[in-house]
Length: 203
Image (cartoon, rainbow, N blue to C red; front, side):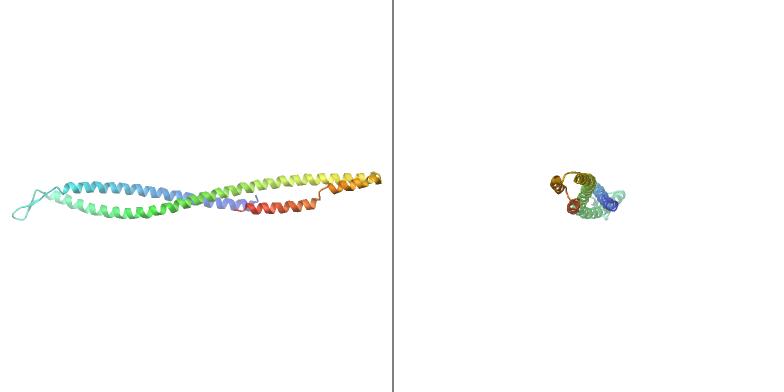
């Protein structure tokens, strides 16, 4: 693989890894908020159970309009409890709405993470194919170089024989020359195959 192509693939891979890490962090944050919401709901249920027991208190008015059976301290506690209950209910409502909103985002984030992972796999496969193609090109060049050297050596041998063999054997040399591959034609065919192969590897 050429250096610019390698750098481009490495840059794309880094972007995909960053997107994957961001999606995982968002999911962790969602789970943390979900756990916090569970704790708030538990507190609200406890407050509801306390309110039920408080409903059993039956204060009575005296002839003068005073209240008996309930102390001032109990009244203050009831006021605080009522205020806290209203506050908790409001908080739970907000958290429930937030939880609903976040839950609706979970499929989207999971989809993004799956897409990022799929893209990462494609990048890795693309890089592997490019490296394999580079290796095959190297082997092909080595093979072609050897073939050209061999053909050249045979050609020189035929030239040598042509100068020394009787004329009646020269037709055999011509037939032997016809069997030798044309290096230029072979090179053009290999270039065409290489271009088709590279076109099929683009992802």
